[in-house]
Length: 106
Image (cartoon, rainbow, N blue to C red; front, side, top):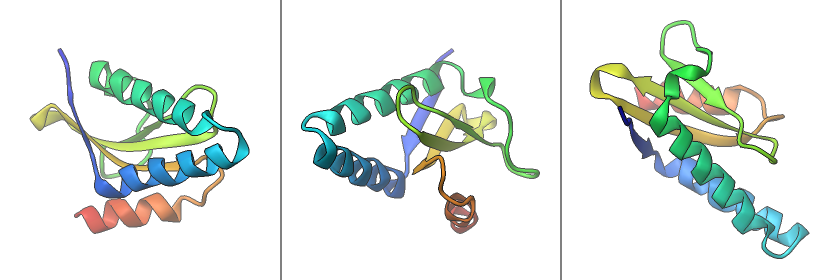
């Protein structure tokens, strides 16, 4: 069974900003980052439930892309067979950043 993956606009902006930063470090590294994040999205479409829940009331989880210190933070909507990517943030970022997005999402 394949899950539908929906990327919120804010998460897309996270990826764009991080890729731009990586390109300042080495030409092409931003593209490598984007490709790795897309592979992570593909993995979520296959099995989003493999990662542990991180929120007491909502089905919030995260997955780390290979090679980059980022977290793909997502909510699993099991009844809708959907994964909603809320944020793609550096792993060292404070949890308040993604928690605020989840709260704003309703």
